[in-house]
Image 1 (cartoon, rainbow, N blue to C red):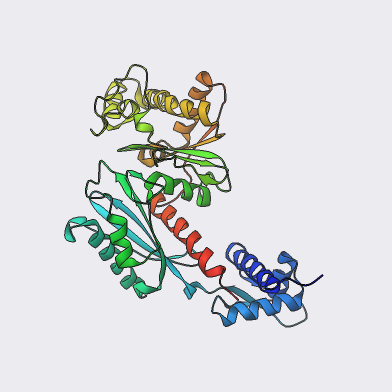
Image 2: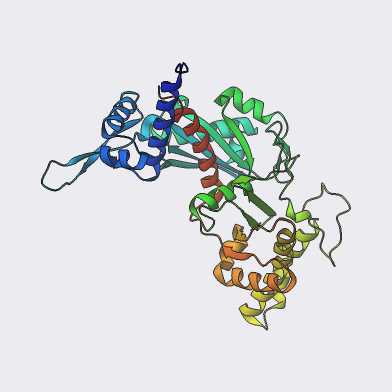
Length: 372
């Protein structure tokens, strides 16, 4: 049978990509260890490492002491082969972080949005400052992912609307790409928190789960089959608008803080709960809050049955394992599919970390697929 043109090249690309992923997740590794994990011979793995080293993707990373023979050389992904930026945009601050291709954050800065005016200039200024702190040129960034409050249109990538960020509107993405390049992505903040939870937190390795974000606003991130579920218009997860018995329906959906579930668990509701729970103490407050959060968790569970619901945001983080356990117990009383409810396991800023995760995924796809 005649060999198809390009087959050896394709096989090298597949092997190179597998090796680079292993060096990211398991490295640094010796040539023998890499060969064992990939199933390649020592000769082939040696050729692979030489090829990747020539392209600047792999570098020597020390030695591993052996037995009687010489120490074995260790190889790892070259951190400086590519960089990405992740950003979180809030009404009163914009935080930008720069990470190398291994995922190590090497710089993080926060700027005041009022200093630069329009959103495009704000983001550009934040990224420039982060690059200056990191000591790299902006042109070396392969991808930028920006987390914002609001609904992002999956078809266009633009912000459809954001109550808290009125200056973020259709057309922002084009302006950002003009300044920063084509690989600029805007994503809902809670969706990015879900990516961080899957990569570093309680949902590590899970393909199906939901993250309930409770704080100033309410949001839901849904991961199904290992992929974020955004909905046709990007509106999946706007759980603040969930109709709740006993709470009025909004008369105008553009008015902030008017959704039924938002009224049930938002800031004003929590303040009233806290005042009412003075006599009952902390236990009374936690039980009352858990009962309210259980309404949202139960609604998600009977529709999606994710198996795991992670409580995040300011309230989920503050409530911790105690609140999660009480919510799980409350859900079990009203929901036929009993999900596991757990507190967030992400340290640091989950939106910023999720933005970096998303940016790295894009950058590695580009960099690791172009090795031969």
